[in-house]
Image (cartoon, rainbow, N blue to C red; front, side, top):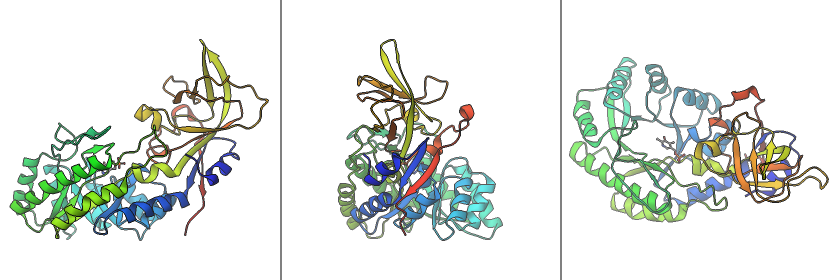
Length: 387
Ligand SMILES: *Cc1c(COP(=O)(O)O)cnc(C)c1O
């Protein structure tokens, strides 16, 4: 749950600190890449964590980055000018954002609706460009082999219904600013390798039939992200090897298929830690509480997902006031009962102890409501810089 480098750095923190182990991230990504068939294009969905130092490591192992806003696009192109912007996705793209993406020569536009298709065409033609399009489709694919949250097929603000996608292609014959490249679908999160492989198979199957009836050259398929990160099992990982093996027959059966994936959480989650110190311990109605510096305004993940964030306690000395070793709920400094990082953990915590929350590298600091109560932001430290 904690690397030696992180443990050493954590003992030295005196307030809320994000510790990013860049060597750990580098190794993790190398293992993902090697587990996947060469033909699979690996993108990173930067909404999981847009930190520039992390992106620089991730970019070494990926075909490119998927951005989901003009803000992400601007950040990526200014922080890492040479890195390919592989895709621009997300609902509610503004004209300004689309124009910026056209100017940045974004590789693929993931089009979310028929209306967006027409606006993209107009803006592309106005700038004399042709936009390469994947239609984002909300396909009714349900795969259950674990804690899968199945999104596909139900009413959704994301993507378009399959029949609308067919309509879009018919309209595209009259939209010279656009070139159809294929289909995008991001249907679920929390997918096990078996679920993810089943989902990919279902999407590719649909996408290639869609191409066959509409445009046989549109054989690119982006099957999205959503690979599981299990916060109750910090030492387990999405089984990239099993996933990679399951994709091989699919690729072999379809030599012209371009297959892309765009994970976020399963890439970045394991290489970030949030370390802080215990400020107070107390007993309320028979239950122990430990108040740490910081809270869910820095690490929103447990509040957002409704889980207990896994952590390691690093005791500092034996003399400070402490809990009795019974279950302790770890809370932050916010004046709201929702500021809970972990409930009823079986550890002894003393004032001054360091608490290191693991799996804090994705959807953590960047999704936090940082100005609530106007505490200072966390310090960010990078460990083992690579390259
Ligand atoms: C959020 C998102 C992803 C990444 O999802 P993870 O669960 O972080 O892997 C990929 N594609 C799209 C379209 C997304 O919205």
